[in-house]
Structures are given as structure tokens and as C-alpha cells.
Image (cartoon, rainbow, N blue to C red):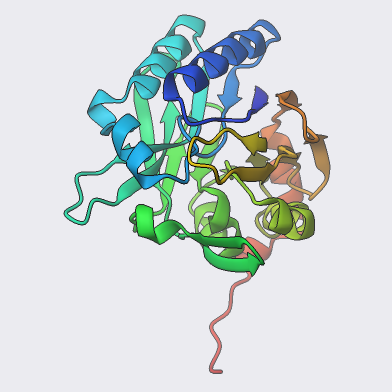
Length: 276
């Protein structure tokens, strides 16, 4: 299976973002990709809660989701929508950060709500409280496809290795990490964390990412790290998108997962222990 990781710079206009993604999907399919992946919050990046409430929709009404499903069906490809910011109907008004796996018929094969919220203070002017706007999910999701078992995660999840181990032990051969990583943490931690999860799990890690400065109406802008990466089950970087908007490609070979896990079978070596 040839996979295409789309690296984009989403702004705060969902219709414009969707148009960019659809054009890139067609480009990727024309290059032979049967599996296309988009980053986290592909539909809208905004730090303004009022703007989010004005432009975002619930899943059933979301036009980005509908249009990307239609395009996947037209092209006959698998699509990972890294995530969409969606109204959830929660009593406290918080939204869902929801990832979708779409089949080549345009149907939703799996959904995953981001479990771990990015509530951090990474430096002066770099404070995030994702849980103020989004409610966390509570369920790990493994999707089974004809070409691989797909473990679905999002961005900050990458710092919680037990989630990836559970997915791999349940049958995930490809782990998805769509992201909108900050430039500070991206420079320090992005590649090492992705490579570690691939090595620990003997799985492909595919991380489509937001890049650059995201447009903002509210004055405060969001800058993201880019460097969409594809990592082999042995921990090798197979593709790195750098910081430009664009597409990188990787061929997924299930035999490489079998080979890596055969060489180091750590997924079957867990032992119970006491303490600390």
C-alpha cells in the first residue's frame, strides 16, 4: 500500500481548508497513493472560542467531513482524517477532537476521540489548555483493514507509550499520529517520540502534521512544527516533509512489521512486577 501524508497549514476557515485537502487528495491519488492521511484539526485552527462556536459543526452536519468522504469515494482510496474539531453536544459546551478512518466507499470505518489533552506550559507565551475547549475520549481504537491493523491516536497521545503498546498487542501494524505539534516541543521531542513508539511496537508510525503559521482573526497566532514523518517498524525515518506545505509518500509492507517483531519480540515479553 502506498500512503501519502498531507502536510498543510490550516487556517480558521473550514471551507477553505477542505478545498486544499481535496485538491491534495486528488494529487496523491494521481501519484498512486491508496491511503491518504491528513493532520490533526484539519478543518479549523483557531484560538478564539467564539469563532470556533460560530464555524464548527456537529459530526452529522460537518461539511468538511461530508466533502472529504465524498472525495475519498470518488477516488476509491482509504483516508485518515487526522482529526476534526467538532461540536459534541456536551453539557459543558466542550468539543470533540475526533479522528476518522474512511473506507474507499466513503463510509466511516472507525472514529477515535483524542484521549490525552495538551494542558502544558512549555515556555513564555506557550501555554495550552486543550481541555478547556475539548473533552477527552476514553476508548482506544483499532481499525482492521485489508492492508493493515490501524491504531488511531492523535498528537499529544504520543507521550503515553502504554496506549501504543496496547494497540500493537491488539493487532495494530500501523500507528497513526496526526498532529499540530508546537514548534518548541516539536524541535525537541517530535522525531524521538515517534521513532520510540515505532521501535517499541515494531510498527509503522505515520504522522501527518500541520506546519507554519496558522491564520488567525483574533490576533494571537498558532505556529506548528511540520515535519510530517513516516517511520519504519525498525525505527528508521522513511520520509520527512520538512516545513513546507506538501505531500510525502511511503510504501507500507506488512512483511517489515513481521520482520521487526521477529527480531525483537518484546511485545510478547511483558512480565508482571511488584512496586514501586
